[in-house]
Length: 98
Image (cartoon, rainbow, N blue to C red; front, side):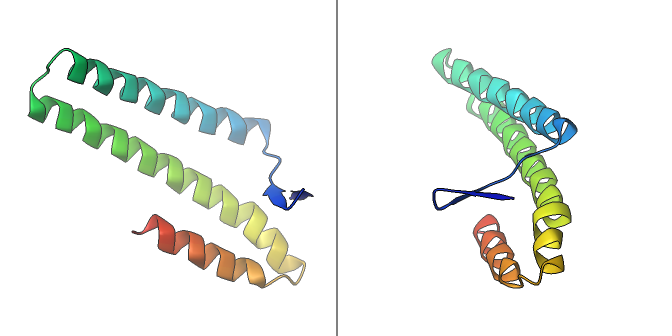
């Protein structure tokens, strides 16, 4: 993990990058589809079902990103003696669980 002007950054493996971008591209397509449904006056429950699918896709993205974060950033920081990363992780989890 690198520090860049007060912001932390993370260099991802090509596989991790590809997987996350692929998920985001699919989510982006789902959101565009939902917008088109609203623009074409689709039935409410049909839109709600698509929103639910997009929400599930975002949750899957979060799970993958969180798992990668714990396996790399958190583990590396703990190995280096930086236990403050645990508090950072707990704060992130609290925000995710709202």
